[in-house]
Length: 369
Image (cartoon, rainbow, N blue to C red):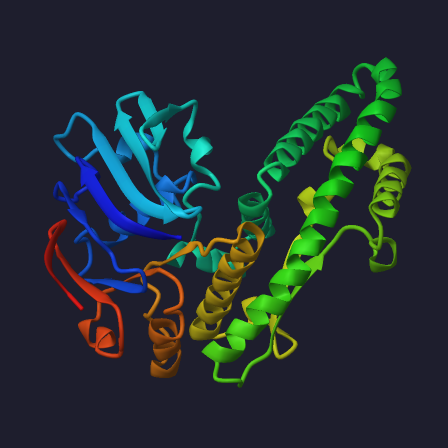
């Protein structure tokens, strides 16, 4: 899978135009605030995902513009295809091969991509919720039906919590908890088992890439810190039974707090280098390397699942990495299409094969191989 063309009209600060990336490594360089990240973001949006910068749809429309549109030509499933998104005040439309789609989520699984940006360092430094979101989003890329399970779990959890808050004032409602506990345990067990299986595969794959990035000097491990004890995690039914039992035994505490104290919404992911927590003991460069390894591994697992090579989007990836790690990212991922942004032109000199785009004031000032 690779993007053969990317065009934009009225999108952010980008000058209307089109670029034709190469199938290998594409580097977009220039000083800050020139539009490099906007190019990466355009590809990511066309993969059916929300902005990795947390932007709202209205922010995609350039200053003084009435609307915006981004288009991609891409090769996938053995043929040339197109994807497009248009943005107008209060309105967003998505198209696949010029056919209007019911929503932008229809793009999921068509133009597959994985993205790294400085915001993703929160995978290491941020809250457990951010790590859970990463795993859930990664699973949804290869198993779109998992999104429905997550949404249903979230709705059931919200309803159970609302019930817990009402019971102190309406004790007759306590009898309805059995049904909600059973439903929550069924959905929760499915979420936890799916995460366990994915993280096991992610750990193996990310460990391989981290070995290359660190030149064999560091061992990366990723473990699922699950609510259910390890000896009860072997089978889906065992996880469900444990969760249901826990919910029943801790009802008084949950009613007192007005919240559900157990389940996948409380879980975390432990990321370690050489047995030590990266969050607590890792340097900035090590933290960045860990997230990069996880992101590249995410791409590898998508490739295995869909038999297509997802596009790798690496935003501001080279800063705080030593030359050895920069060399790996620039030249050891050339068997797939990669988009890299950076500010330091000197870093680009390490690229042995690929295409360079110099970005100035939202336009392509020059491009060359």
